Length: 496
Image (tube, rainbow, N blue to C red):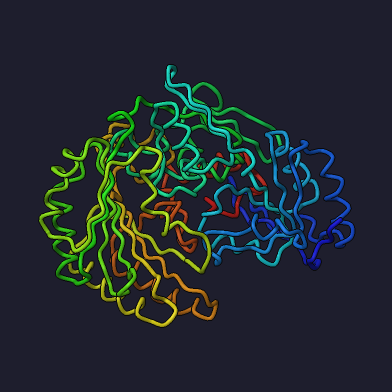
């Protein structure tokens, strides 16, 4: 039997202000059991779990693999990982953790990049690893699909393609699909189907009491509203029912990667062309500023997607081809592989804080300023893999949905999510990376209102920047008081 390689520290839960009631850490039991007692308690949990479930301790071989994250800046040094295999397992772990005052964090793809997760560091806590629950069932005749808690984007694409269907996803294969949808749901297919939150038909959710409730337009409607845009604040979604669609063009789409020389002048031409040609139905543009091999010089790279045949795609993107890219990789692509061109950006490891701004449009002068900032930063030793990402999607379909119908705050604004990700290995560079990222963000934002896509948030923003202010935020906080009054689901971009 493995032993816990950890020390006993005081424990804390997120401080929350709910419905005028301030719940502080001092009001709750502060100390954990001794290491030996905690080990014993974990062994008492195991018999309560299903046969396929398991518990990893830091001395176990599987521990490192099951705690690896997309960004090392969000690694929290957990005490144990509980690999759940069923909804009842999730319930058992939540009841166990809350009864012993042990913080916990649920994970699937491990791409959550908010610095708010670091509040767990130094505190004994449990990771609830959902990856064993990765089933995706597609029922195309009914127009629905059922997704289990731990499924990642690639598994949804594979299941949909096998069923001759389409299901909305983001653009990164290894991201957990459910948390991505709950935070708003950005991706190329917005131009076909609307936002990710618009795909959600119902959810089975494990509450802070370790009980299962259903949220839909018929049951717990207030919770259904809240999880569509701020879902990680209210519980662990064990299963999500979403819309499924007939496939486009027989399931064969088109993807292209265009590379342009890195200069302010070329950036201006590319950005202006994207604005002028507009992103229409079945189109999506993912812009990357990077230093790719073999020259490692600055480049503007466009990953393009089109949901139809090559001839139509080339016509739709002709203005970009007319700019004479120095690199072109274009081909018909099966639906299951439409995100493969982004795999390098989605790989785990290294330190990757994120600094994001959501803008309707950006002045070219401001883009030139942040281009210079990125070129200077990425030229530093150890920072050459740093990137700037810009999502350019067609929002007409998303705007057909009433803005107040979901908790997602930026349906009508923030069309372009632009973020810089300083990528480096050494912790000693954290302060410099923070200074660069903050300057980048402030330069783009200017004096305007701050709008940040929750899934890309750094973690230092005010809740109103992520969830909207005024009545919307107050409504979310009242829901929090109802469904999670002690704030046990408060480690990732909390609303309080």
